[in-house]
Amino acid sequence: MPLRAQYIEDVHLGANTYPNNCGRRVAEIYLTARHGGIAQPLANLIWQHILPIYNSVQNHTLPNQRDAYDQLVINAALKIQGTLQAQKRRGGFGIGQKIVNLFMKDLWALRIILPPHEQLLHAPLDRIVLAKLRNVPHTWNARTKVVANGPNAREIADYRSIQQQFRDFHATCPIPFQSVIQMEQFIWHKYNEANHA
Image (cartoon, rainbow, N blue to C red; front, top):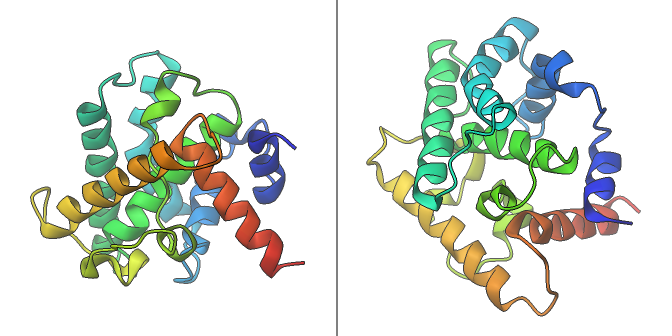
């Protein structure tokens, strides 16, 4: 099965999820962090931090350069962290990056994001994916509990380092995936297949 179709089936992603059910999808992604659920009003508030990215994808203004794209993801994840903290919810940058990166993976699976932007997508970080790396910075041992105190925090530098490790892993992977997100989907699916069989 092609990787996009596999992901759509794995997460039961509907073709009308975006823009019709965005808040619900944010709530579903939050649940994957195992911090409990969030109410629809908070999910909708978080969606407001992702909406500018969605609009830039729709308007074909998503950054084409890695540094600009990386900063877009980091800024959105920090905003999500701020909203979660303001609402006294568990989670921080770790959950923020997961929400943003799974949102982008959704758009990739739905063929809304295509090359060359596919090459910029980050791996959504969780324990399954991080287990593939040899040198996970200690700041990321708790994954979804990572909190960053601003854009220059150590946790952000380590996040960038982890994404670079995935790009390096992708470049030397014996299976010739077209992008990091395809490789991440393969890893994630194989783990779930083995553990839910």
